[in-house]
Length: 74
Image (cartoon, rainbow, N blue to C red):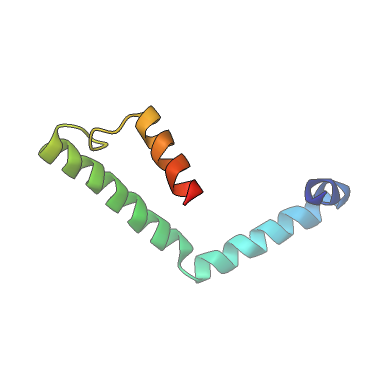
């Protein structure tokens, strides 16, 4: 329903709204926070690779999916 409403709006208005929201997020420091998290994330992978021989701490997609399902049911 939300997508249908957006499609019905003028494209320029949607674009300007998106630009305004992005600008406010920039002023709030969102980009810096995301960049910092990105670097910490990759540092953690490198640390796992060095200490455990696997960049994802020995987990594979199946184990991660099982852990996500278990966490969701809790």
